[in-house]
Length: 409
Image 1 (cartoon, rainbow, N blue to C red):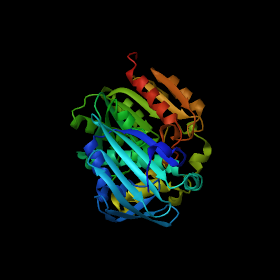
Image 2: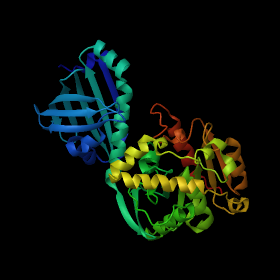
Image 3: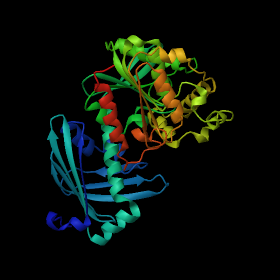
Image 4: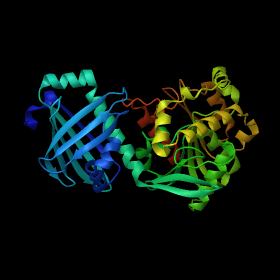
């Protein structure tokens, strides 16, 4: 099909995004089928690539496996390939389209311009209205960004008897990220990690029994997680860092502030609580008869992608449940002992109650409070609640950066 840029406005989708990776790496992710299979398509899709013949006239055949259980055959023909500059291919199965992807090096970043031109305005309207093609393309770019980050910097350290997984991204003042219960680095922070790495040296950690990190023959506790993080920082030669914890990671952040104050510059305690009354009663009643089926499927899928071990997944679930069943309040004097400037953050429809968040921020000697629109984690784009159209995660990153840059205590 012809692709005339001057007459395609009524049948094209056009998206530009600056990716936090150099152009040679982005090109590799686009042109190696083993990589492409891991990020292609909207959220929830997986792929099987049978042919990817990267030359003009070469075929690209793949089957996309949808979250609804259906398979979608896709056949394309490559038309133009300019290394590190441009890919052009025609999608020859229905709906027919031409895709042009241009890559522009921006130092250690890459500007991607992704254009899809459909064979008619009618086909364009159909794929937009019936299949959500515009949002699907945005999700596809988001998956590419997350996959790029995940392939670059994973490391293992031996910490207090377990293998602890961590990643380092970006440069600047160190910022430690601590994920939520049952989660991983990317299900908690995948939406905002690239933005944080643009201004900080991010040390993203997976805690005991979660993600890539090993387990020990002992229950999970927030105090043990805090000791593990402090020991990892010691091994990395990082004397002090900003600590950002979400949900259960926020509880670990509180423990670090109490147990290891010499390791902390500033704290961000997001969607966490310091006493049982800080959340509704129904939350605790849910632990009377916890069901594995209630665990968000996206957490299960992500864990199994990493470990391929359903028994380990069930073990993590039971240890997470036990930790919350055994949850005891921190004493007010413990919260008052935290001298690090601390930003308490929740959503206005979060699990922790707004009154509790305000109370905690006032107990902290240098506490600040932010209440943003959204449910548990939605304001940071957490995977179980993310809305790809929301701009609130961008606003949250701006708030976080301003808090971390504030010279005042």
